[in-house]
Image (cartoon, rainbow, N blue to C red; front, side, top):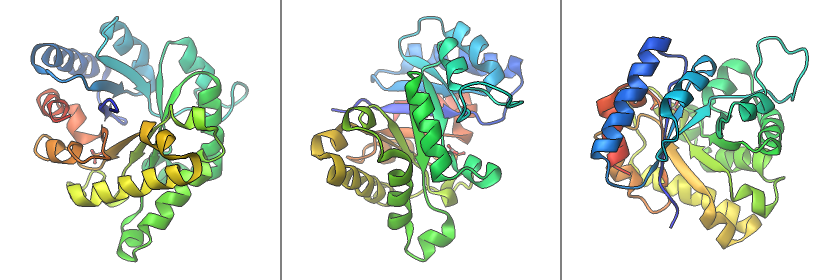
Amino acid sequence: MRQKIVAGNWKMNKTLEEANILASEITGMVADEVKGDAKVIFCVPFPYLLPIKNQLGNNGRIAIGAQNCSEHEAGAYTGEVSAPMLKSMGIPYVILGHSERRQYFGEDGKLLAKKIDVALKHGLIPIYCCGEPLEVRESNGHEALVKKQVEESLFHLSADVIKTIVIAYEPVWAIGTGKTASAQQAQDMHAVIRKHIAAKYGQSVADAVAILYGGSVNAANAKELFACPDVDGGLVGGASLKSREFTEVIKGA
Ligand code: PGA
């Protein structure tokens, strides 16, 4: 059985004070109310990684992650943050390839393969995002595109390594729009991704990979989405910024 994961992607939101309050509220609610053993990850803006990590202390339920890292290990790259820096701060997870990074910062599959490699080299666990824009879905190209996104950034990895990656399927048309994929649409795409991994690496490797769904996950739809056999939890944006709502999402896992 794969462990369920619920990752909150805070994106570029909250002041430090607000971030501290949000983290402490969720931590309290999870401790008091959440029965299941889903892993929770707060993917916070870079400046809040250490304060929130320190606040969490040795909380075994909730881990911390970054939202991006550089493809370079060090050097003259003003404004960038490297995988070795994250590692040195004790940050275990990093989101890579979020559709906002692809869309606004021109990140493509080749660059993301480099980021995946540098993250893995330094012992970080990538949460690799893939997903199709609306026009691709409407022209029925979603399966082919998502397979390609997985191939071009992950299929150079060995079987032992790809097993350790977390994949997040996030249809771009569902991100921040309030328009969630139906449970059936999510399950279908997750099965496509898992089959694609199985075809290259074998079923046992594919069965080990955690595949999260992302795109307007909220308290009302989380349970149904997370109950799908190939959906191993969620990557949650808007709903992760509200402590009550996010706690309810976690309860759905
Ligand atoms: P959303 O964002 O939950 O606000 O749609 C998800 C994401 O971008 O990871």
